[in-house]
Length: 259
Length: 289
Image (tube, rainbow over all chains, first blue to last red; front, side, top):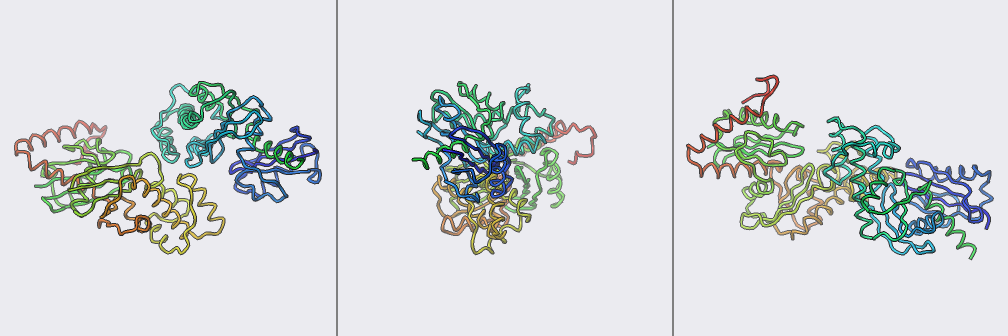
């Protein structure tokens, strides 16, 4: 099978993985920063460099994501949902429910024992169900996304937000800051709002067997623990939750080419 | 008999002072963070503009999202009722009102001068004034310019997102593709008209349709709504004050039912309340009335 690359060019982050005979050997993640073509080239190059490979050594490239059309190399396009379930199956074969929260969308997927999509719900109409709201809040609070995991547990009195709209949430957060509400209480309040919104979606799907959360938002440990309480179910998070799509793209492409 | 209606919106405060059916003063000013203080100030300004003293006003009705913060009001009435009354007085033939406020949008159905149904969105910034405020920042244009500018467009840009945050990103994308500001504005108005239409549509839109609130001052949004519903929309000469006008009409009605003694008693209570509310550390400065 040789070397296969997988790319997932998202609206916020670009991810690349390198597989050698179906085994993950290298990956690289970098903010897209609005430059799809440039960051697609860059993440692939960095992932190759980490294992001392050149582009010529790659047999196949599989790709998915919003910015997929900007990739300059020849590649095989794979649908995102299939990539995510397949990538999760590769890392955690027992998982049957995947909650994937990216920058612009939230998806809940059921997978078959072989890692194929059995069912899915997608929400991409509202910024509050996505990672976008975390970026907005990080700006208001002048903090970074790491604080969202770190500080959420330290809250003594989580702020109550009266709205689910990202625009109105921003206004409310600014008012809370002006009133002197501690940062950790605002973060915990936001995590609760976000968890409520995502949980409502997961409830419609019903969790089966092991459940995993992926996408950039899965790095927010504060949110994950609130979600676990809301859903009454353990939620696993891969060490690197952002690369499941890229792994799936590489695996599916290699398989398709070999058969 | 002088009466007043004051409408404290999330963004703009409006006041109408009338004598019988004649409007003596109408004022519009941005709502500050301190409604109570502001309510006093706009009341005083409005009174000054028609040379009246506070005690000459027989009855005051407050409405709008900040209506509970008007300590000198004799009565609070919901903005739905006040808008309905205001519009019905100006345009008796109107059956459907579309009110686009600073942070919400509403649809009101009227039959025989009575409100029969209403629908409201205050959960999501799309379809409210807030959406356009965000976009003017992105596009670097003034709020009052966006309507006329959008009408110059020949090929509206495609805006598919309903979410304000995502639409903002879509605007950046369209700009990077080389779309003109006019085309993007036209696309934004179209997208919002469809959002508002799908909400109001639940009420079954009946002619005549009136548009009020700050959104009605945006000619681009009014035209986009007309395109969407397929017939002309009536817009009051000053679409912001229909709520305050309705409140004043209600005040007139209520006051007419009260005896002079009851009115006097009301007024005495009103003054007292205002003083207790304004326990200012620096007395005299803000206590205008």
